[in-house]
Length: 239
Ligand SMILES: *C/C=C(C)/C=C/C=C(C)/C=C/C1=C(C)CCCC1(C)C
Figure 1 (cartoon, rainbow, N blue to C red):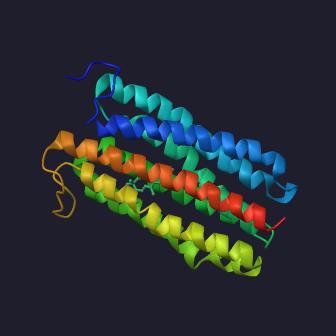
Figure 2: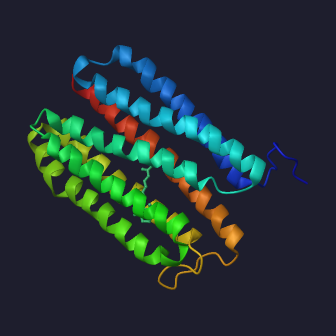
């Protein structure tokens, strides 16, 4: 029997919210303290890594409590977190290619695409559940545009001229976007009532939402902390 405010040993949703909170907190402390050892050239990039995990830590702390008390999915705060942190991840792409001549217009393209991706995703997940397939497709288009920019477009081209270390780091970050970020549409499909394109992966709607939360929690930890560590590693290799 589960009591309010305690985590039953088989409550994987609450467990991943808890672990997620701790991991984001620890990562933030790490990035912030390492700023002292970081050369001025990379300091802003590592600071942004810390801001991403710090914003996530605050949201996770809240989402953890919300989920524990209500047993519900904290979708609203999930999206508030993403709306703040995903554009900051786009800022990272701009910052590491800036030395190779990235223009501010590239930053706006990335930010704009990420906002379209998340706003349409929120509409499909919360405001217009019946239209979730259409909104999911629109969101997916914005996602592919970001993936295109970092794999083949401006970001990729600039990174190639920015030296081998930046090129290598950008390639790893591009993998995060292609594979790590692709986990989110999977979570969306899991939580979509009636499934997507006939894919109904979990039959019980409540269980489907739980599955979605677990998928999102794991993806967030990989993407935010992993992403930050790639930037951190780059700052160590190249002063
Ligand atoms: C730290 C949080 C991150 C990196 C969040 C990324 C979120 C996405 C890439 C979400 C993408 C979505 C789609 C591509 C289609 C369905 C709706 C979304 C918003 C889940």
